[in-house]
Length: 134
Image (cartoon, rainbow, N blue to C red; front, top):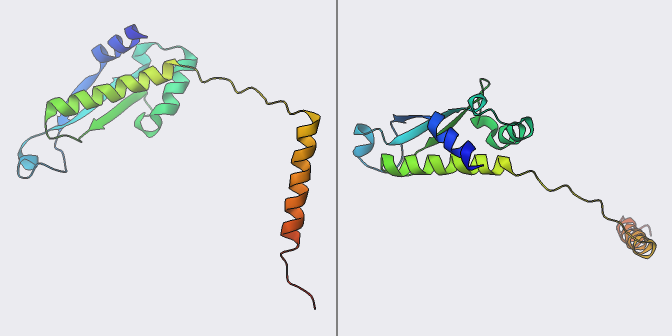
């Protein structure tokens, strides 16, 4: 997993863009926001990992297979760069782990009957809520 993250950090492209938000006059003069671009196809991920990453990335993944992350929460380039890299590595780590398969619960006969009895009771309560005929 660490090798994929190292490869991703080596392949990503960083560019700095003008940021909005806090910073006063500094916002108009300095490009503090960071935009990371990573070509996912260059990582050569397994199909299952790629599909999970595609789901996690959502709209941040382009049709060409690039993940585009923009970080503009902080006032400095260094802090925004660190934030973007953390987010990228977190996405890659999350994609590595397959979700646990849900096991179908098995309900015994007594619990099944109790559940159906509760549903019947609730149904009669709801049925009796209508208008009262005099």
